[in-house]
Image (cartoon, rainbow, N blue to C red):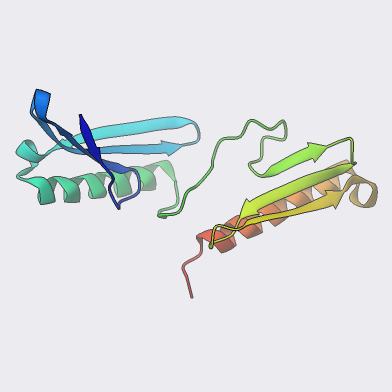
Length: 142
């Protein structure tokens, strides 16, 4: 099975000669759930029309799920105990650590001290920083 890299986020080209399967596979992931659909070239009226159908389905599915439409990578599920992507508690150092990636792909980090803001205040402040940095990354370029 040959898979060709697509320039469209969450859409992959599938050309499987052995099964005579040709089309576009769309996979939208949001909040830990995956929604997927295959758009056959034959059923859609050709390669270009199946791609247009795949793009339309992806955009509509993201809209229904409440996922922001962006071609940038988004992380919506986390394994850290805080439950907030990019925010973790470092009790040993007495702080919440905040991390993000800017629009150029550069890693950013900061921390918020528990001693200065208290545990609840530091968490709130860390979440605000993370939300602001993520909004800056996803904002349309100027």
